[in-house]
Amino acid sequence: MRPLFFLLLLLHTCFLGGNGGLHEGLKLLKTEFALRLYQSAAGIRKATNFIISPAAVSIPLEILQFGARGSTRQQLEDALGYTVHDQKVRDFLHAVYATLANSSHRAETELACTLFVQVGTPLSPCFVEQVSRWAGSRLETTNLSKPNRTAVHGDQRASGQMAGETPGGPSWEQDESAFAQLVLVSSMSFQSTWQKRFSTDTQLLPTCSEGLVLQVPMMLRDSRLSSGQFQDPVGQQVGVLELPYLGSTASLFLVMPRDKDTPVAHIEPHLTASIIHIWTNSLRRTRMDVFLPRFRIQNHFNLKSILNSWGVTYLFDPLKANLKGISGQDGFYVSEATHRAEIEVLEEGTKASAATALLLFKRSQIPMFKADRPFIFFLREPNTGFVFSIGRVSNPLD
Image (cartoon, rainbow, N blue to C red):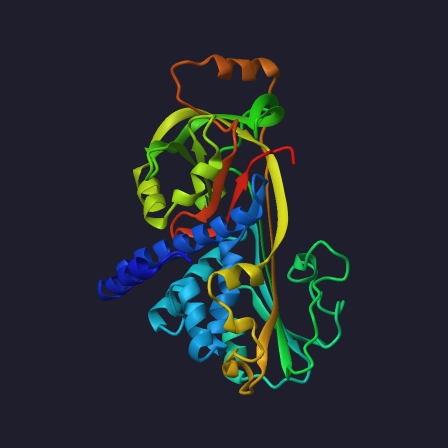
């Protein structure tokens, strides 16, 4: 697990510096969490497209902090890098989630967490109140004693469709010794319109992917954008571009190796919150040509295995979990944690002829960002630095 001592020390210093410092400290911690999640997912989905949502993963971990006690709570706090039991942190997160909810009229954003609780289990009124106030979260009772229980679908957007690719939703092993179980299901989806739409129809252009040359539909655009060329800690050159969505409610932040022969896997391990912070603050606006593939990614993950690898183990252990804050009873633990995320990046605007596209190819005086090789993307809220989702495009045709 990535050491968090430096970031925790930074956050403590930010508390002393007031709300402005707290804002910056939590932005770094959120970015660090997103990168750790990305790197864990990248290890599972080697050389493939994937997307995972730090926002949708962090929300259930935040909620569980309200019900966790002792070492169980400490493991959750270590995984996130902060505690929601600090009033300043809680107020900041409430404000961020409210901002995201208020921007939904300009972007189709679905951020949800459902906690399925064994029917008949008494719940702490305080815990129920905290869940109801947290972003996109809700409690639902069901009978968790039956494997492959189809009742664990609830609302199709918020739970059933996220449960996985197999019919019947999530499955789990029944533990007769457990008094009650809790199933976490989180999801995130996003779709929006570019601040400035791509000016032409997609064109088939050659793109490198894992040693292959593919003909990929590319969106084309000429505009003033924030971009930069940087080095990672081991000296590898990367190109960075930020594409804003309508209303600046979100932006797509792209990181791509400058050298086509440099695999994106060589860049991934060296990304840190401080590096992303430096890059985002060093971008410069310039007129440029952008070539971006059209792509759609949808997948799901078993969060239990990822969190176990981070040291969050007590939460899933019926003998060690301490979640007395949920119901006041022993034997309460999380049996499953699944996650689903999706993103669709499309061109929206007027169609143009192939001749217009050829004019873009022939320009020599304008810088170019051409995503014709695997790249990493962050979907983020620019004002708060909140990371909706993070992922990799290895092959836009998959």
